[in-house]
Length: 264
Image 1 (cartoon, rainbow, N blue to C red):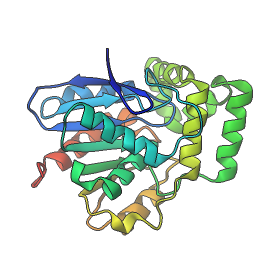
Image 2: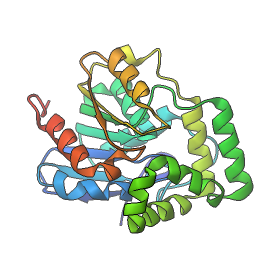
Image 3: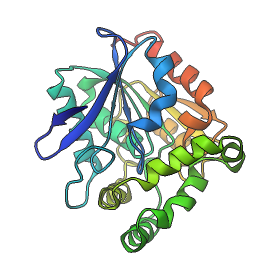
């Protein structure tokens, strides 16, 4: 197992794919780990060296005290790249991972060739909804919210047809350390990129899920309208489009990353 020592935390990371190939970094959603990207590894490693990691507070990475913020989570990525001596990467993040991508494109554009913002928004939810979720987890643990979250992550039809995979996703969510989850909820609650998006000049792909109630197609279209030159694609899925619509997701993202100018 590999860990990068950051200034105040340890970040778990995992390499896959051919050495010397361009690097693509995958960033997980709230309540997930690097394993949420299992459906991407086989296809992406045909063309890229894949770097997955568990974001702070999740999986095998440190659960540091206090509330987190998106700038801090983006700085974790920069510290990881510095530790691994990687100058520039392609970046793909989902939900809060997408917010990390926005932050990187705004404040560390020289480190990213292109960004893919999946099932995310400039502003996700309200203070009231995040405060209620934080309270629920503090009082009842992860199982108190797991059922409702899974209902929003994956459509009912997909869950019924893929019960084993749904159970694995739910296990990943329920295994998240409650303290790390709550601290990351605060990061999502406090993040607001609505007035900053026009500062993004990095080539950007936006992916939304038609049935995503958490970060809706309208949220994705808002990003498209504010980020100059951004491309918008809508897939038939709920929030975890990379799992529910994996083939279309892989084809769409790989096409964007490999398109002209993909290597910076």
